[in-house]
Image (cartoon, rainbow, N blue to C red; front, side, top):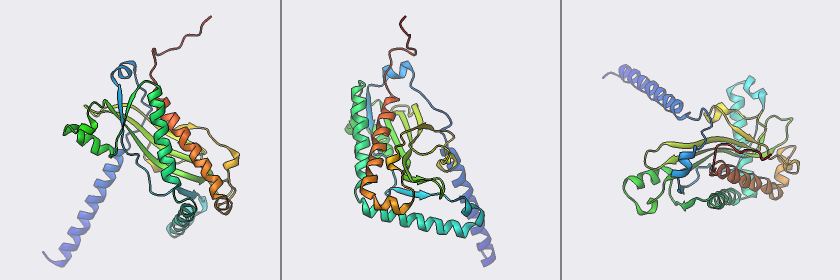
Length: 265
């Protein structure tokens, strides 16, 4: 094969791979509506396994600037570099904060689910490892009816524009999936704390989000310098968001005796 043919073949192969990746990305955008547990599901699910929570290794600190979208790609690159620098600075000021928040969220979900009548198994493995373990009859996942899969898409402080304050929040996806059939039993996308007008659902590859308002002005910071200067205090805002997230996810899986509540006369 000649050099020109090799180059053409490589270009064609690259295009095919990119097209497949886009197709896979599109297939991943499965969250089109909120799926609630029905009464039969509530009766059948007794044991819930909680695998590792999927999350980035950094707390996200970002501020959007609409001007960059007009200027072009070079400006966006500069914005990305500045954003990463802020993440690093905030992470150095709060080195263990992300793990503390994830652990707190996990413990909160377990406690609430147990209070609601479920048996909860804490799994030191990923969601996919748990499914594979079920097929291989791994004792660690024996007896589990469903897996509660949590994926945190964004967690940290976010500002919608240079004129808006940084505020704490989280965007996450929650799926309760049956262990035997891998069927979604309950599903939701949550925006905990962020201004709903500032969140781009397209960037998370989801079509909807349930917004939970938990804003507290004492955790609003007018700019990054102020946020960094109050790094220790601001950690309280993210821990609060993590607690609310845990209660929200577990609360959506509450067992109900009936579909309706009748008011007594």
